[in-house]
Amino acid sequence: ATSSRQSLKIGMIPADGIGREVLPGAKAAIQALGSSLPKTEFIDLLAGFEYFTKTGTALPQETVEVLKNECDCALFGAVSSPSRKVVGYSSPIVALRKKMDLYANIRPVSSVAPSPEEKPQVDLVVIRENTECLYVKQETQTVGENGKEARATRLITERASRRVGEMAFKTALARPRKHVTIIHKSNVLSITDGLFRETVRAVPTLPGVNGAYDSVTIAEQLVDSAVYRLFREPHIYDVMVAPNLYGDIISDAAAALVGSLGLVPSINAGDTFVMGEPVHGSAPDIAGQDIANPLAAIRSAALMLRHLGYGDGADRIENAVDEVIREGRYLTPDLGGKSKTSEVVSEVVKRI
Ligand code: ATP
Ligand code: MG
Image (tube, rainbow, N blue to C red; front, side, top):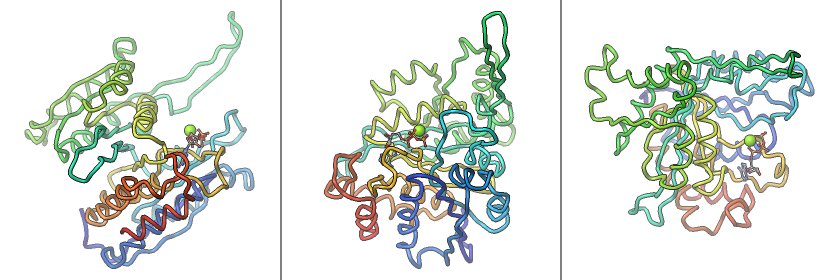
């Protein structure tokens, strides 16, 4: 944690759809913190599917270079994912996670308690491995006896599993319940999921840990039963750590428990860089109407600041968001309200 920074440079990558509508809210929330942060500069950067359709590239080299050489952190909006394969296109967010070595996607999901004194019913963090699993996107199609045959490679490495496992234990240690649940399916996929499970389990015994995680309890669960229990008794979970695909699905499912995808933030974290990103996508069904919920993006900004050592600023943003939700007067339609994106943002800013 460093609060000794002279300035804070934030790369802003709105990308597509509602990503462009929610990112200004995140910026406004950070700006509202004023002098409690070092001098803050926002650098607008290009990427996305729409940018691809205009230029033939989804992630310009310049964006990556500015992030690497000038920025302390970044905020990403959302990217449209075409449902059919588009020749030459690959997702810029997947590429960014790899290029910036952002190996863990950290997604806290919690319900807002009816009053600040009470505890939320759902209060968990999904830690999703961010660089491999089926998302290495090595797919092939051939024609055989059974007609077309499609195959995908699933990569699980010890290094990536260990790094994401360490992130899970570190995260658990900082939370009151200090409990890690390892999500896998090693009864079926004994080699790949077996490696993930064994590697994460072994984190507390790594050299150098020296008992630091002794207070953390460990459980494990098959992914299917984890989803079932997530819906029936979500309070049993604290930190859930999972390979990329299971983590993706579980965190969307967990989002449903707290009311809307539009509430759930994330950060993509590596050892030297962090990028905030709402869990939701570009939501083409509501884009362009100024009704997207900006709270996931605003909370992502808070998570990013906390990761950089600005916990007080993060608290102020998160408390303002919780207050707006609890009051229930200024909510976007996904939460049953009638407010515009911009109205919700100004209510949050007012409370910060
Ligand atoms: P993409 O391919 O970009 O992920 P999608 O069609 O899967 O697009 P998502 O953004 O993942 O759309 O959203 C799924 C559903 O949740 C959509 O109906 C969308 O309108 C809704 N939703 C997502 N984010 C928000 C938000 N911030 N505010 C309101 N509704 C949202
Ligand atoms: Mg989606």
